[in-house]
Image (cartoon, rainbow, N blue to C red; front, side, top):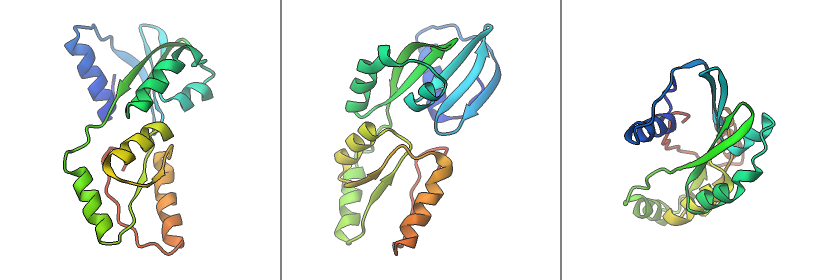
Length: 169
């Protein structure tokens, strides 16, 4: 497809493992924090989050149950549209390291406030944060807005340290 994003690589790897034929794309365009678009076999493909689908006029109602289920399980729903019509929903999830909960507890024990700042949707972010003991979550934050959120925390008197987990961090 042309993307270096970890989610894209995971999706392509899963497709190959399933023996799916992957056509070459043309006109690949990354949409940071939202997804990607390209032309594949003369068809317009849009891959991304619910927000980009709605922005592009794709009706996502048919995928609502899958979107909710994936989010409630702590995954991120990735929607696929072909020629402007929803074609499917797949779920991806970050693997939470076993020591993450202990690390967060140790940080909080030092009286350090922990905030999770993520591009994931609110349901997914809340589920992940809850599983590791993070109480404050800022979700649906686009990559270009993450530094603004950090600056806002600093303006409110916080000394901020940041740990990133992805390509957009």
